[in-house]
Structure formats: structure tokens, C-alpha cells
Length: 244
Image 1 (tube, rainbow, N blue to C red):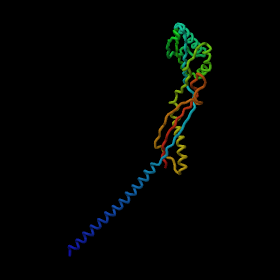
Image 2: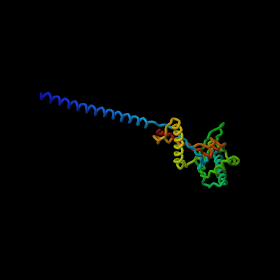
Image 3: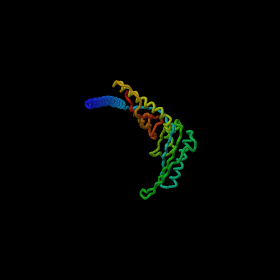
Image 4: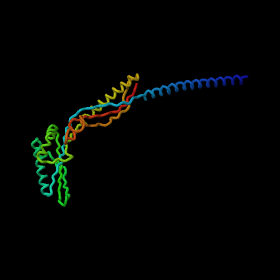
């Protein structure tokens, strides 16, 4: 009789332990499921984002002018062709001196001599290139405006002659322009968020893009002018914003 009572007590205790363990397991599964679901929800919310582009543009004036002057002289006699070339070189030097440039402003960048025969008569062509570099943009423009004075002085300008203007201070305006482009991108993101009933959060990722520098009013500016000093700098950034 005593053994039966003891056995019953043992079974009751074992059942209670199993019930408690099952209860704890159930609570753990419920809590784990809640935390997992909440984590997935938060993860899903964190993945909500929008990718937009921002634009920044700025008009600038070139700070470097480079004028390449290509000219030539022809003759059936090499010495005569060389004499004509020396005369043209002196005329070009005088032209720039009259415009207020220093004597060493012009630098030779290349020369060649070509000889061929026509009906048994030898002909010589001498070609030469000079380059002018200056940061005085106004003076450079004045020189280009009077380039036909060189023609009147007998200088034969060849293809390849022309003024080129360069903006060299891009690094000075890069930070401000990137900030402007990012601000423009946020405006687009805010408009998207407003339309979809959400708010814009922080930046998830961003790509700066590249800067481009082009003539403000398009290419060209007349014969012998391959560029203009008035430039437009442009940058496009791609930004991915979180949505709250």
C-alpha cells in the first residue's frame, strides 16, 4: 500500500515538472516568435529607402588661356622659305608685344620641314607652332579679336590655330557644389516621402558622380576660337536616403 502511494506521488511530481517545462517552453516560443517578428519588422523598416539624384551647377570664368598659333611658309628654295618663316615669327612677336604681352610669353612648341617635287621642281614647306599661355583672360580675348591683324601682316595661319580657355580652380568649389547637390537630392527625397506618407531619414549611401566643365553658351565663338572663357561646372550626385 505504501509503495502505491509513493509511486503516485512520484508520478504527480514528474507530471508537474513536465507541465512547468512545457509552460516555460511555450512562453519561450511565444517570446522568441515575438522578438523574431519584431526584428524582421525592424529590419524591413530599415530596408525602406529611396534613391534620388541631386544636381548642382555653377557658372565660372576660365583663369587660364592657351593660344596655339600654327603658321607656315612655302618656297621652291629652302633658304627663302626659312627667311619667310623668320619674318612671320618676328611679326607674331611684334603683334603680341603691341598687345602688352611680355617677350617670353610665346613659346615654340614644334616645327617641321616638308619637301616634295612638282613637275620636277622642288618645293619646301616649313611649319611652325607657337604657344601663348596667360592668366590675363581679358588680354587673351583682345588678342583673339585682333587675330586677323596677323593675316594682314602676311602670316598664313593654319588649321589647328585657336584659343583654348581652362578653369583650373575646380578643387576650390568642389565641396560647396557637392553639398548643394546633396541638398537638392534631399528635396527630391522629401517630395517622394510626402507623396508616400513617410519621412526622410539619414543617408544610407551616396555616390558623388563626376564633375563636368563645358562652355556656358555652347562650343565655338568664331573662326580660330575653339572655346570661350565662360564655363558651366556641373555635378550630379546619387543619394540613397532611409525612409522612416
